[in-house]
Length: 278
Ligand SMILES: NC(=O)c1ccc[n+]([C@@H]2O[C@H](COP(=O)([O-])OP(=O)(O)OC[C@H]3O[C@@H](n4cnc5c(N)ncnc54)[C@H](O)[C@@H]3O)[C@@H](O)[C@H]2O)c1
Image 1 (cartoon, rainbow, N blue to C red):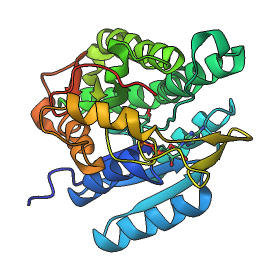
Image 2: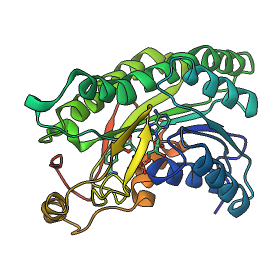
Image 3: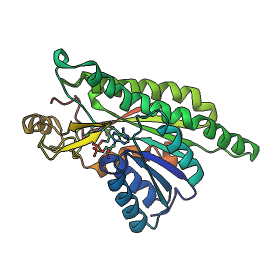
Image 4: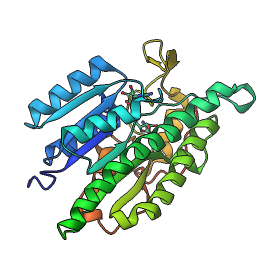
């Protein structure tokens, strides 16, 4: 395989594991230098080291909670210093499911924060650098397309017990479509993927072990086996997707073959059409 992303520099959030990791891996495999961001410092360091070793790639790990207001700027500055900013994949996220009657304000706002505000802050922090890179291209009389891929979900089509998550992922689509228009003059493709059910810890059983410390609080991750059974029946391919399959959809929006695609929400779901239940 040709290293067609050679000389390209990518930033991937949520890259310690799951879909963000698979995106970072694919980008590195195809030649990109990758800055990986996640709050889980140990897992992130191990993941960056693995990708560096397996793909002879330059990877930089920047650990920290992206919901702290200063972190997105720090991550973007680190990526710029490491190699530039040609590709940004916003994948950090999780879900906090609840019936709306029992959903407190924090459970609502945390989903808007991680799925909409964090990508907003990352992209706001990147704006000045992207303009600088574009100005250099114009001075050199070359046309270069840079890429933003925001990881959304088919929950935007509605998902019981996920009104907070669905609203956050829908806000991300609005951000995507608006920036696609705002940044088109800078030759930046801004797209989103609406992922279906993917086999990560978010869709594994809700066991006592499947928890994580996110934003200072322990969060129960996972989905009930009953809901996953229903989901599998709704996927024409008959199973959940792998993180690599999910990353494939995001990756193609990072390649030169997507240069004429912008402002789109690409559904990557094995044909699954609806959001999932808790
Ligand atoms: N798994 C699915 O079925 C599915 C479906 C649709 C969309 N998604 C989306 O895909 C993205 C990746 O999810 P995944 O399934 O790979 O989950 P995952 O838990 O395997 O990976 C998510 C990563 O994001 C990191 N993260 C979470 N909050 C963070 C924060 N505040 N700061 C920095 N890092 C943070 C976590 O530490 C974790 O390593 C999420 O945005 C999720 O909403 C997943």
